[in-house]
Length: 87
Image 1 (cartoon, rainbow, N blue to C red):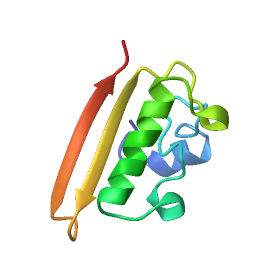
Image 2: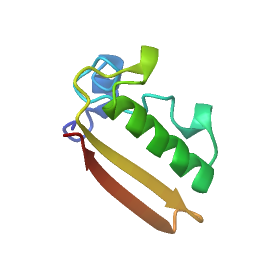
Image 3: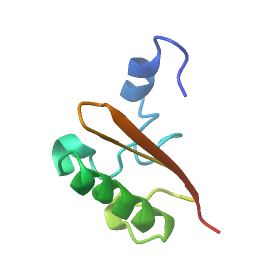
Image 4: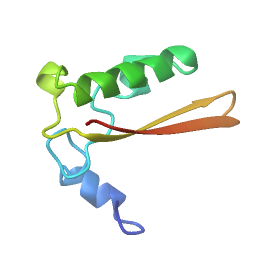
């Protein structure tokens, strides 16, 4: 997390990078990887599975054992979040 107004600073410092404290969008996110809707959500799910089973290759996050997966649909009118933990 970032204190109010500090997300940009943390992003520039690498906090959200693959090797940072809180890796985000390790497959590039939907702007560079897919599209909205089911296809985009499935891309997130596949990436989460690959990370948590240590099969993400060069994108692999060290010690990936907990993930927050989020997808939205419509015109941001429906949202679903899923928390996954590897055992």
